[in-house]
Length: 473
Ligand code: GLU
Image 1: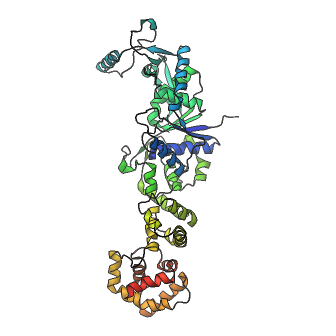
Image 2: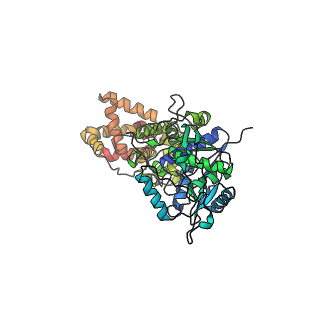
């Protein structure tokens, strides 16, 4: 039986979970789900100066919100420092690593020389075979890998194919610094090995690291995980993704009112495709996802597409789900205050009733909240400029003419109210729209809203009549 798939997401907590990281997490999560395995989370917090606890929290919360929660509690890389040191000791014992006493001045000289000769800067191996008895006093050594001098190291990458690194370019890189701290290169390998990671899926900015990391696996006689280095996300213009393009933290997408299901759908298409499917449910992603379908070219970020997908997923969500999402997002949406005007039970009831009409036109939860605003405003309503124009331009007369008919209405449901307005429009020789527009303006203070008969019904007889009276005068 093949080993169970274990993937991992390994962010550095120096900032929030950004959109590129979210896509890496999604691919790891999907691959684990698709293969019946698990995804682990490792917080790469060895850079003590730049790692922060709020960033760790934001990453975990961002993953939870996106529905990409890891299958086990997060592992702290920093907490494993003793284990990293122990592996370096073992590499020394195996003769696969050695102490290097080169001083800073010597290293600088090496770099200068390489520059003058137009070679990439490489450590020249001067302590590789030297007797440590010759160590100069007062120099704390670093520990370097005894890397092969000839031949090549091949990373057999599922996305990039066979990537060859001539060993002369990989040099004897540092595993343990002179202050006793392990390097990132070493820590990643030790952690991936100890966590049982079978598949490393990460951005292709780590591809050259993969060559060096392969040497560490070999020096320890450890199995090398399958690697898949995914192309980075670029802006719509092909340039590196910038803030303007959408290189924001995941929480910014939450504040803009995107749904986790829509963001997953959007992110999975950044670098992966299944035929020409665009709208992909999470169940389908899990069914279809595989690493050999990842594109080699950089993916391009496109806000328009994300927005269209979000609108689709809003319409595809049940009214209840949407009400829950709105209530849960009240504190993060910029217009969330609207949903705090009434008590929760009233707010939920009103939203639920109006949702069928509201969700048809909203592309984000912000727009959905905005569309629901008419439910929660108190009289006298603020009237937007365009709505005022309609009312001033004969609209108030229409409202005044309709008012007694509404007052006499026997039942207050959308269908009967529509019949009533149609009858009036016919008698008055007006197009239906000419009657509906002033009603909308009076009932919502705006020129856009769900269907006006739904608005009348959702507001209820008393509130609707009061709003109409306010404008009929
Ligand atoms: N901590 C690295 C990063 O945030 C990822 C390392 C890896 O995936 O191996 O870019």
